[in-house]
Amino acid sequence: MISGVRGPIHAKYPGIVLIDLHGLIIRVLTSQTTVDDLGEVGDHAELYTHLRVREDDITLYGFSTPEELQLFELLMSVTGVGPRVALNILSSARPEEVHRVIESEDIASLSRVPGIGRKTASRIILELRGKLPEPAGMQGQALAAADAEAMEALMALGYTAPEARDALARVERREGQTVEERVYAALQSLARS
Image 1 (cartoon, rainbow, N blue to C red):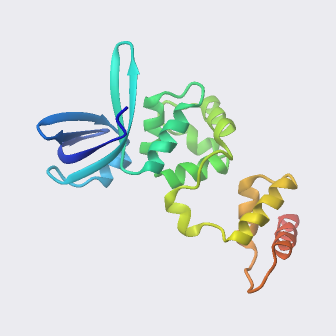
Image 2 (image 1 turned 120 degrees about the horizontal axis):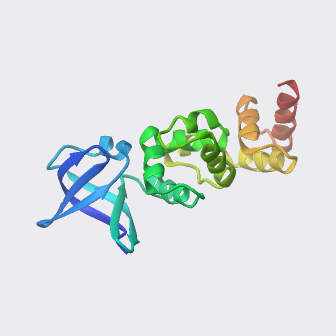
């Protein structure tokens, strides 16, 4: 199994990067997001990879972050979603945005991606909602420990993760506020909306 490749960029094309591994040129299929994030030809690149072996094909997929690779693999685990569709999704938006679209159940945004209809968009949301890891880009916005507990409490009461997250975001944080007080304030916010 090839976990990653490192080396100078030999060439860049839409959805493809060629990496020079000491004279051996490796073709890596990727998202347009990763292509845009990489430097220019000749710059050093490091990609986290997924090797797909089929009877008549061996393909290497690579991404600039482990989070994007993990999201690619999760998307391919959905029935009816292959590597091409997963790459289309990751090319349409950054992992943080894909995460937001799935968690907020935004079928309309997802079905605008080439190769995805409403039925496939619904299946992706159904199978992945609540199962996605928090993207690295959102870690700076991660909930405090008290908010994580409050979110769990709200979800135990039957609210979805996006509903709980939005309600907690609307509640003002005060010094010394307990988890119970945050949950109560979030419930009041949810009752008003």
